[in-house]
Image 1 (cartoon, helix red, strand yellow):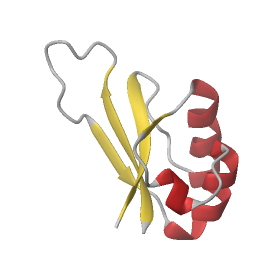
Image 2 (image 1 turned 90 degrees about the horizontal axis):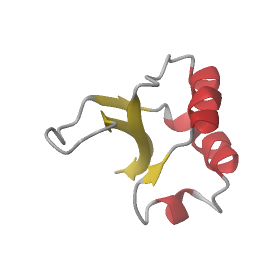
Image 3 (image 1 turned 180 degrees about the horizontal axis):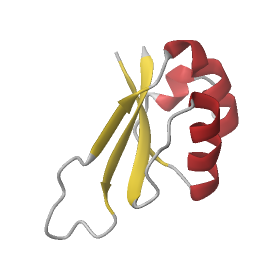
Image 4 (image 1 turned 135 degrees about the vertical axis):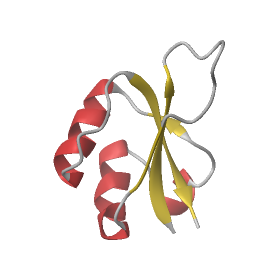
Length: 79
């Protein structure tokens, strides 16, 4: 299992299509789960979680990926 970040337009009334997707390196799973305040990866698998601006900045720093700040970003578990 790995974590994936998905991004959608801030105002999605007309366009709710996926605008950004990034699979995270599974070696970062434990660190990311801890940062997001979840118990474990299985607990995160219950759904997708909206990321705050602070979490986005922290994840960008950890992953070395410049995550977009002009989208609603969600994180979830994929098999």
